[in-house]
Structures are given as C-alpha cells and as structure tokens.
Image 1 (cartoon, rainbow, N blue to C red):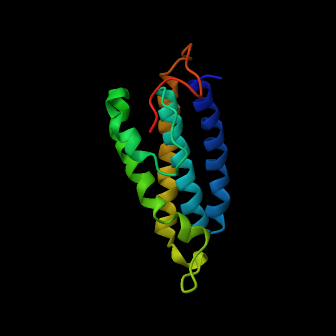
Image 2: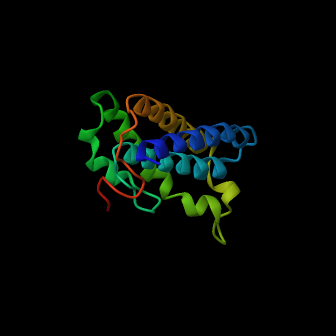
Length: 152
C-alpha cells in the first residue's frame, strides 16, 4: 500500500467520523464533540503528511511537522493548512479533560455549546480541506507506508 492510498483510507475514516459528530451535536454532548473533532483534525493532518510522502509519528499532535512542510502544499491550500495546525493544537489541550475530567471538573459540564460548535467547524473544515488536497494527488509509485519521506 502506498502513502497516498493510506491517506485516502484516512479520508474515509474522517468522513465517517464527521457524520458521527452529528449525534453529539444533536445530544449537546460538547465534550465528545471536542474530543472527536480533535481526532478528526489529527487524522487529517496525518493523511496530509502521508500524501506528502512523510510517515507521521505516532503522537496526537503533528501540527508542527506539517507546519514545516507548508511549502510542499499547493499554494491554495497553505492558508487553511495553517488554520488546521492551530485547530489541532487548541483542542489537543482539551483532549484529556473532555474524556476523563477531574475530581472537580466533570467532562459533561466542561465545554459550552460555542466550544462544541467551534470544534465541529474545525473538523468539517479539515475534512473538506483533505478532499481538496487528495484530489490534487495521484498515486505515487514507490511510496510505501514504511519507507520514503522523512520521519520525526
């Protein structure tokens, strides 16, 4: 399997997850919206790295790595890529709180409707951006999921 094929598989995963976010929005489950949206953005950034021939590290926040590769992106996608890097960092800070909470902070009460909707918008932007990015990429012979590209 090539890096680009794996990136296209990630697109399917994030499209399905974005659809699932609708349930959290309907139920006003803002902690789940925050966490799941962050995971969508994370997977989109990793798909973009794969689309550039880079095997992403197995960490949750890869925004800095993509930030270093902005010049490799088509010019019309760079500004939104910068937005997605920020969108990856912001809810990353909320990841643990939205899932576990603390003794004095219950996850279901930690996030507002505005914070949930903000996270949803980031996820929707990320999925839309990835579709456009991948539409401009072709399968690249010789790319593999374990070789080629740079690693961090």
